[in-house]
Length: 255
Image 1 (tube, helix red, strand yellow):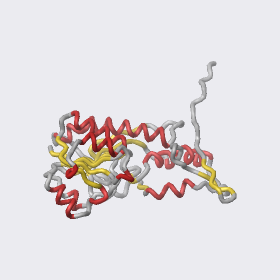
Image 2 (cartoon, helix red, strand yellow):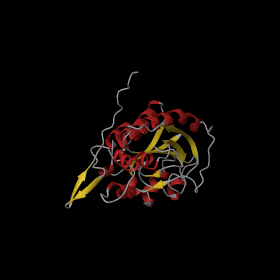
Image 3 (tube, helix red, strand yellow):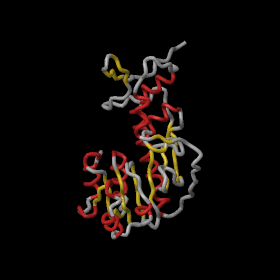
Image 4 (cartoon, one colour):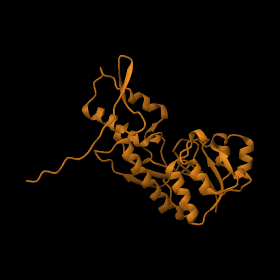
């Protein structure tokens, strides 16, 4: 199977590394532009493709770029933590479709920062492998795993749990996809939740005159604890004061 790989972040690097170890045929690579790359150099080095087969993900609407990708005759697209919306003109070139690995338990937390919203909204956390359609994380589900959210989890620790679960799900499921042996589950647009990147700004600003339950406030603070990102804050005398939580279990009491 001829694969066009679209990836970013640590999971994007590790999933590509695993595919290469399995001897899969990566015919083209799409990465974020340099200022938006995470583990971009590692992904490019692992793919080990000529420069003309490595594409800028921000240019996927350019007809010349699409023609160059089409010339590679890819059978399937694999998107792993890739941050650009893929349009029909791109998706239609794959005879076996384009799949996406999303670190959320769809249909919950489509879109951005699923690790944050599982804590803030109390929605199930997990990871999902699905086909890409014209919506955002709305395509038919191939496989998914749920991940437990512990009381001491922060946005950072849950993110790392989701990374590992995502990689495991991909490795467990890829052979079935390759052999055409998957049974998909259609998502209903009326179900689940969606958040845009900008939505975190509304919870980051803690209003000192607003009433929160203790649970609501703690969940916001722990969800936005992810150093070195600044996270939640309150404002005093025109200056922002940032907050981060340290959480741990207490020692068990012995009777």
